[in-house]
Each structure stands twice: as structure tokens, then as C-alpha cells.
Image 1 (cartoon, rainbow, N blue to C red):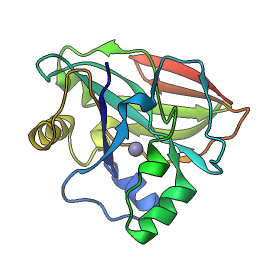
Image 2 (image 1 turned 135 degrees about the vertical axis):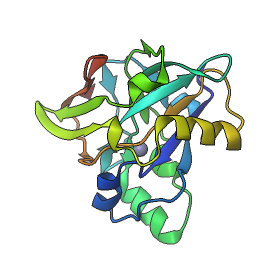
Image 3 (image 1 turned 180 degrees about the vertical axis):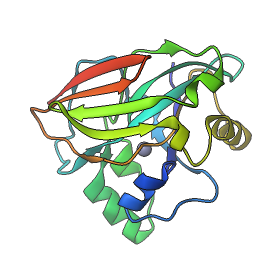
Length: 195
Ligand code: ZN
């Protein structure tokens, strides 16, 4: 069961810059509710009130019984950007923009034998066949072992929890009728219809 979704913001320098943010000096962590996750669904239902829901494709890690990483998947850290910008400007928490229903679509999981094998993976996200996001996990500001340690050190991580490791540049809006496809090359691919 996924109780908590620990997320890292601005972990790829190019993405931090595209939103006009400074590159962080320690991991910027925020939460999505565990109940935001949908597992290997075929559809994503955008929130009725959302006018600017952005895709953020990310590598997501899952903690096992011993709080080691034993599985991983693709996660979409869906974000209502207009709402997030308003909240950011006021210095308020991002929960409304980040933690709505179905805000964390997941692919199926693939096994992780050694965390090092995640250090050089290509991520590709397309909308209606056109590439929007492309990056490699070797471009992360904080490495996966650093993120795992940081989260375990500061938070009550539970078995089954996810760690979303940040998104490469190229984030943008989704609209109803879009077909999107996310691929971690050599590991997994997943397709969703936007409703
Ligand atoms: Zn994100």
C-alpha cells in the first residue's frame, strides 16, 4: 500500500530554470497524498477545476519492508500550474496544485536489483506522438542514493512509500483528448488517454 508519496522538486537544473527557480542546495521535498496514485491505469481524469494541468514525468522508487529500493516505475507528478503559481507567490503550500484526485498516475513496476542501475536511464515523454520531455537520470542535481538517504533521515518513511525523483525540462499542459506515452528506455513504457 502506498501511504506517502515523497517528491523532490527542481532536481534537474534545466527544469528549475524553465520555471524561473533557483537551483536548490538541499533537496526540496514536498508530499502528494498516497491516495493520489493510480496504478497502471489507461486513463487520466483531469480535475474539473483545473485549467493548466502540467505533466511532470519522473522516475519513482518504491521502498520495501527494509526501506530499501526494490522496485521502480514511471510516475506523472501532475501539477495544476496556475494554482501552484498563485500559491507560490503567496508563500503558501502547494497541496491544492499537487495533491488532487488522480494527481499521481503510475506505470507498472519493474524490479531494481542494484540502485546504481538507475543512475543512467533515459526518460522520454510524448504528447500525441510529439516529444515534450527528454532527460537522463544522470542529470539529477541530487543523486538517487542522496535522495533516498535524505528522505529516510528526515521523514517517517513506510514500506510501500514512493519517492519521486524530479522531472527533466519540457513540462507543459495536458488537455482532454490527448494521448500521452512515457518511456524509461530499456525498462518500461506506459500510455494514457487524457479525459
Ligand atoms: Zn515533480
